[in-house]
Amino acid sequence: MIALLLRDLKLSVRSGGGALIGVLFFMTVVAVIPFGVGPDLNLLSRIGPAILWIGALLASLLGLDRLFQAEREDGSLDLLLMQETPLVLTVFVKCVAHWIATGLPLVIASPLLGLFMNMDEVAIGATTLTLLAGTPAITFIGAAGAGIAVALPRGGLLVSILVLPLAIPVLIFGVSAVYAAIQEPAPFLPPFLILVALNLFFAVIGPVAAAAALRLSSD
Amino acid sequence: MRLVAEGLSARRGEDLIFQDISFEIAAGEALVVKGPNGSGKSTLLRVLAGLLPAEAGTAKLLAAAQPVERLSEAAHYLGHRNAMKRELTVEENLAFWKAFLGDFANGAAVSVDEAAESVGLGSIAHLPFGYLSAGQQRRMAMAKLLVAWRPVWILDEPTAALDVDAEKMFTGLVTTHLARGGIAIAATHQPLGLEGVKELRMEGFVYAHPEAWA
Image (tube, rainbow over all chains, first blue to last red; front, side):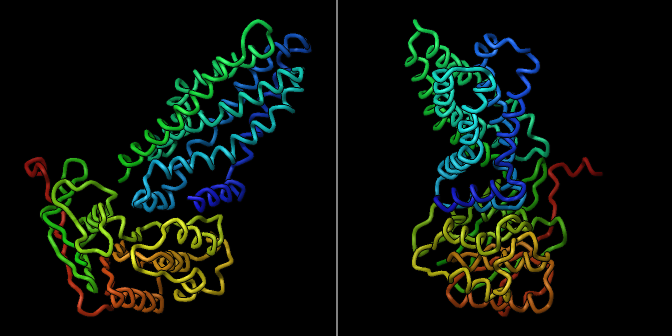
């Protein structure tokens, strides 16, 4: 399993791996917002956390379709399916590798992008923390979509559309936890704990659904 | 150890590709599946590898060194695609499969270097897989069979894109595998040069609705 994790990480940084595509897209989205919204600093700092979260969500969806498609194209998926190792575990490890390669860079880049949005330290800290807790959930949900669309030649957009409704709760609780942290009366912990719960929930449901979809899709 | 298939049928869409195929292979024996294009050779092998559901019938590995729930757990599958990553070097590819697949009960596999040597490409194992020619890629995919011990080899057109020397080399690999008590099932058009193998001839389509074609 460690071997699979290391291989996927290696692949993500080699040519065509696309580890940086997501974070570049994230930066592009957030960087153009101040130009579009205009130089109203108060407005920027108010919408900042939401913009960062939306940018991170869209960037996480990018590249999810390749999660299993690349394995299928070169025949590796056949071998992964045949093993005694539970397929759910294999899928889980692939999701973890995918998150480390594409999700973690988003979390690391978010404080820098928070400065673009004129956010203060607390808001930046809260956004980074909620992204750390929330982006794995998006990867796990996305794995289910990627499993369903694995046999489709242009499944990229389909994966996003399939996955987006399930990712909405993650977005809602992620953003509301940040606002709870910066607006005094609202407590931070309840929305944050729900976000963590969503993460754990999808960490189980996502790989199970993806494994079932992969079993059915083999031809 | 015996591989027993009983009354296997498989379906693609409406049509039965083949039906009621039965055979039995003992340790050290090979089965060569022959037949024209589209007669269901690949489908049969994918059913055996557990990658397609059988419409009817079963395929089981009896009296194996460790009890297996599915035949596929004790099998290597070499399909049309090589299951190697173009971006990684040959060594990295082989080392990954060695670590991921692991050895089946009481069998020992050779190291990555030895496997690359035995397919005659030890000197270029440091290159990215994508740089190799089609024939070299195929040879390296065969080296994958050696780095993890599996008693059953399921081989789909193994010698496509190979030159005469490589075919001989491959025959040697299969012979060694059989001598160690393995089982090999190969679908092929070319003569593999193996001696004393069983042969299974696939007939082809059985249409579900023959009248539709009248």
